[in-house]
Length: 239
Figure 1 (cartoon, rainbow, N blue to C red):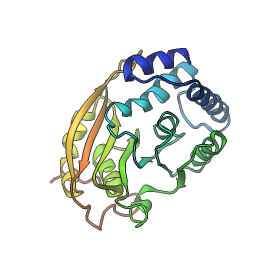
Figure 2: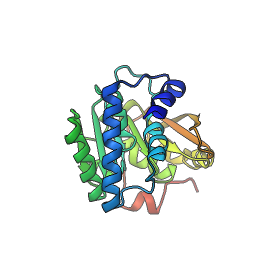
Figure 3: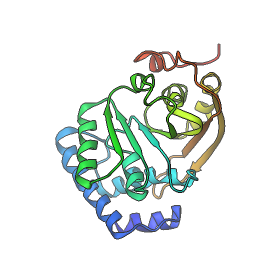
Figure 4: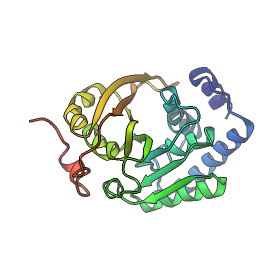
């Protein structure tokens, strides 16, 4: 964990405590163990886990200006990224993890329970379903997704969950500028406003990475998100 501690300090400007490093080390060990049996992630090397999962997750802190952080929803969290590392580093955060794949949701619940993380809800369901439930709709300050879908689809997934003045963060690769252009129509009708593309550099990773920030400035129409599967099959784009 020495490299992760160094990178967190030099790149993110944060000092990881011994309990936080211990929690991340345990998380890494459990991820490797579960991955050998359940195929949770294609990243299996410990060094890659620390950079491409842990450090990558924590780059969200570069654009999250709330202290303390308010409600976060992590959509399509997979094995808990970026939500669980953010929770470990910012324990005051209220976190909801949404994951449609059962084995991944079970792993997230195992990590949350074993580490004693409080104010974390793990939901095994589709985000289209959750986005239409009153208890989750327009609730969150931050909605985050990583490697889930193209940006026009993500806008339909995330913006209904945000309160007015909330912000979605889409963690994207080199196609982020083109995707942001493609998502302009969906962003507008969902009540969003594009803020910026924030370039992120990870040590030893050649691919360009971006955080795409979209603010919620108006109420999302009740008809969105559309029924399960439709946002992915028919992303909203101007004709």
